[in-house]
Image 1 (cartoon, rainbow, N blue to C red):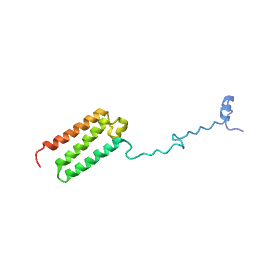
Image 2 (image 1 turned 180 degrees about the vertical axis):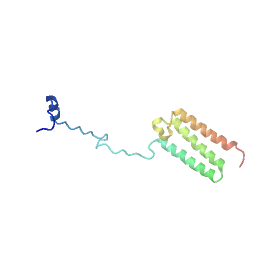
Image 3 (image 1 turned 30 degrees about the vertical axis):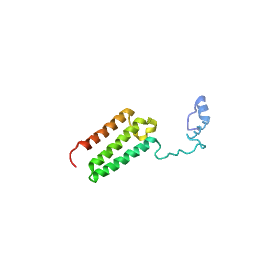
Image 4 (image 1 turned 135 degrees about the vertical axis):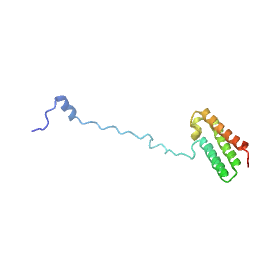
Amino acid sequence: MSVHPPLPERARWRSAAPEAPAPVEEPEQDKTDPPDVRSFPSTIGGYVYLVALTAAIVGLGLVGFGTWRVGIIVLAGGVGAASLGRAVLRTKDAGMLAVRNRWFDVALLALTAAALWALAVTVPGD
């Protein structure tokens, strides 16, 4: 004796038919494609970014060792180089320099470099 009540004919037909297995999706990268190898850095802007980062580290090191005026000028030069790099490179090639709209980035970096330079040359003292 069956525990379940009999199903209507249509319901029996649906439950009796096995479902087809879902198709297996191929991975996006075909096996014949070479693996995604990235160089370091992968854009021209990445090199400009590394120059600006190096200038910032050297500049802050000079500030820490007491020659603050030269250190701030070196820091301003690095930020100015980043501004120039962002101005001449396409967004695709700018890498980590591209944060916002191109000209907003250029203006913000140029103003920061100018303010740092002005600070270094106008503050009286050693």
